[in-house]
Image 1 (cartoon, rainbow, N blue to C red):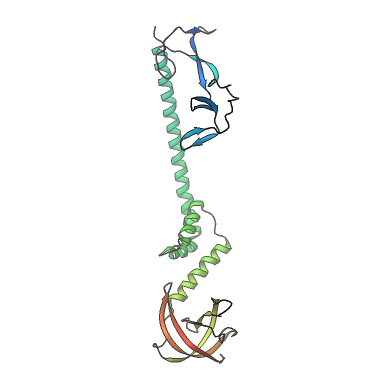
Image 2 (cartoon, one colour):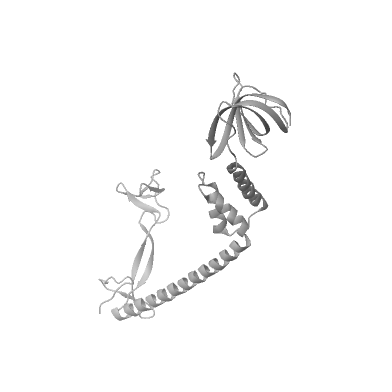
Length: 263
């Protein structure tokens, strides 16, 4: 009578019989802590470039360098028994797969419902965030939007303020127009938004970023500190040096500014 091991391989030899009268054979379980390296079985430290390595030369304390972790009794089966086992295993696998598919479908449906509720509850925030994702060169807003939708996390007050602030900033920047013509001498009423110090210990230099009352951006770059100490709105007489676009914002660059008085 032909006998087979569990993986279907034909058994060659004389089987042993257990106390239940079933045939079996002893099966060696390979040791997973050592390997033959350079013709010698050694305890392995790890895997390097896809191959086990050992720099210590230590013997394996798990198997004593035999390569066998342990010996177990392996049942042997007739062809009919093996067919029944395989059929049962396939049935269990099919049942498990169906359960997994059903669970996945349930979770997917729950996700759709949860995301719909999340979008409805945070419609204004998500709509504003979506406008920031358009032409998002830094991908910061894209990542934030992706993270919010992935986690369905309620936006914090800080996140809401950050998004609303950026939307307002972009709207203000979009309204910025060029002032005058290049070479024109103009009197402007400005308010400083930011001063960037780009100088060094030998040569001071500043970039003053301002806006007029209509939200138009005016910038001045130079060594003069004439605009640095101005607080609040002020009037300045200056010459239009050039019209530039920086990060999509129209900017009027002035030169030789002279502060006249506070506005």
